[in-house]
Amino acid sequence: MDRIECQWCKAQNEPERTSCTTCGAPLDKRNLVSDSGWTEAPRLRDMTEFRFSNSTCQIEGEIVPVAELALSPGDSVFFEHHVMLWKEPQVPMSAMNTGGGARRMFGGMPHILSVAHGPGRIALSRDATGEVVVLPIHPSHEIDVREHAFLAGTHSLTYSFVRIKGLANVLHGGSGMYMDRFVTGGEQGLLLLHGYGNVFQKTLKPGEKILIEPGGFLYKDSSVDMQTAQQRFKTGMLGSHNMYLAEMTGPGRVGIQSMYVHHGSE
Amino acid sequence: MTTPTASYTCPYCRIPSEGDATTCPHCGAPVDVRERVSKSGWAEQPPIRDMARIRFNRSTCQISGSYVPVAEMRLDPQDAVYFSHHVLLHMDPSIQLESMRMAGGWNRVLAGMPLFMMTARGPGYIAISADHPGETLAVPLPPNHAIDVAEHRFLVATANVAYHWEPSGIWYTTQNGDEQEWHYPLGQVMDRFTAQGGPGLLLLHAQGNTFIRDLRPNERILVQPGGLIWKDRSVRMFLHFEYPHGQYWFSSARWQAKSIWLTLQGPGRVAVQSVFEPPEMAGSIRSSSGSTTQYW
Image (tube, rainbow over all chains, first blue to last red):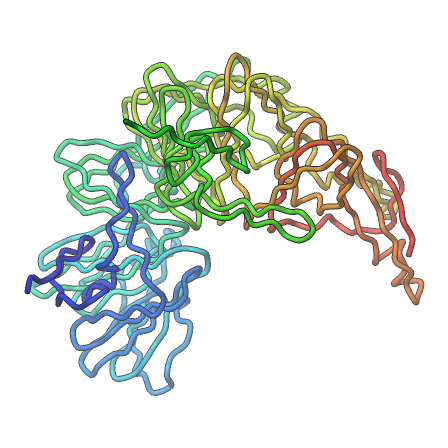
């Protein structure tokens, strides 16, 4: 019997499964795609479970979802310490130094990330209505994520951070100074993000452009170029008003969130 | 031979349509759900289904998402919409943006309202979303029909909907030491939208769930001022203060235990949301706009 391909992460699944073993997306529902080509991130059913390495992740709740991880020995995940909701007492913890010292401090980013090792259970959640977005990262792939948006990354991901290029992008881009960058080596990794509100993804063709409110940016493949596009408007006697949008140029995926932090264009 | 389709009148926007789709083409409300009306007469406005489409002029609007819905508009070259600039989520490079000047600039700044709005002209896609969990409400406006909308609820409107703003006329003052404090439980201004030259479409954002009610002439209902979304122009409104009898002087009505309501008086339709900020409670009320009072 034919296996079922997950429309979100393209993983192959057993025919009897109703949710993807790799990302938890429902397999018995079609992707919701808007007329302009934005795909809605799959709404993970309450208590959906999926696997990574030898461990499992279960998504609980729908308004502010919790990712509960059952870590096997040898597996670990890293995260910003304030997203930890609860953990079993025996779960071994360690710290990952992110490097970047003062630059991280000026950028409002944590200096260390917490690492939880198996065996044991740990649960993570952020602090506002939204969706957990599960992104299995294929080997030798890079993805850039808005700061403070990632919930957890698995041990097979290498974490770094990249400064958003250009002073105008930093000052007016509305996405902060840095983006988190996650890179896989030879093994597949799993990245959990929290998107505020609803999350949508679009795959841009080479050279295809889209303008995005910077506060709505969530993630992008590192192949997608991000620049700040200035829009200038005359406002009569009071002069003019500048509005800054993020111009994304393909090829690659772009993810946005519908409830956004609006700054940088006031 | 084709069978004529039965005419359907949407109970939420009151506009007839063929009724052969699963959602109303004018406001996006599902047509295959039973109207849910509470025993007191409030009808729950059903959320617009994910990916439902609404038609306006030569363009369409598609609502996607459910926590913080996105209104994605495919604009025809001859159509335009306007919105406050901070609700823009994404757009095609082919969309032409212009600023729309607002009258009464300084007063708007003082009232915390956006100084100007953006006009987007097709062709292309443009998407708008608010920044709070809730529902997107589509309010189709018949020609020359006007509604009053509480401030900060407005999302986007078609270009033929005229926009004005007026003082809400709902206020009270309290005394704090030597200082007199002014309070505007409904906000300082209300937005007025009027469809001109043809039907218009107005999209609003409501926090929480939305309930609508048609008030009969002189029928009154008390609502939390912060819960009002919109009302027909024919609906009158004024404040109502309630003072329960406290056991001690410091728990008495003048200080702690008072309720500040907004009275809505028909005829006309009103819409409220389930998330609201209660009015500020600070000392005794010295003066107010037109109001009624009750001690109990």
